[in-house]
Amino acid sequence: EPSRRHPAALVTVPHPDIPPSGASNRAPETRGARSEVSVPARVSKVTDAKRLKVVVAALRKQVRSPEGVIREATLLCELICTDPENKARTWAINAGAVEALVAALQRHTMSEEVQHVMLLALGNTLYGSDSEENKSRAASAGAIEAIVAVMCAHAGSAGVLEAACAH
Image (cartoon, rainbow, N blue to C red; front, side, top):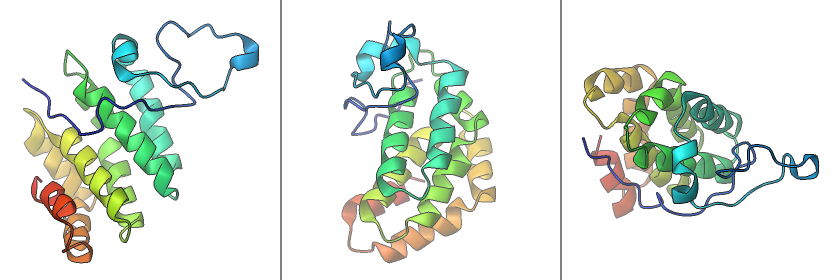
């Protein structure tokens, strides 16, 4: 089944908790340093459940920071959209990605950029063969109300409305 591509799916995104491919044994002086690596370079290394849990946990932790939620949601989309076995979506959902994305939608109602990225990330996360179950999970997390609020707050933004209507 083909994955839906996020417009930012191939950008370079630094992440403090996920080393680039081949750098898992970094020297102590560089441990914790931010690394910038393009997704294609680390796709084969970052498709396991543990690393997706790190990203979802970081998304929850960054919920108050517009820049933080954009960074983590973009990385989430990259991991989901570049997983050749299409397992990352299920792992992300099981780690609580839907609830974290809805929380970010609810927290940053007036930021058009945050809303647009969160809606795209939510769409990528919910896309797939088990999407009815996942959409039900999103509804239980408050996604319907959050998406309606986003549409009302950003009625003049074609990009936000398009992303909102994809659900």
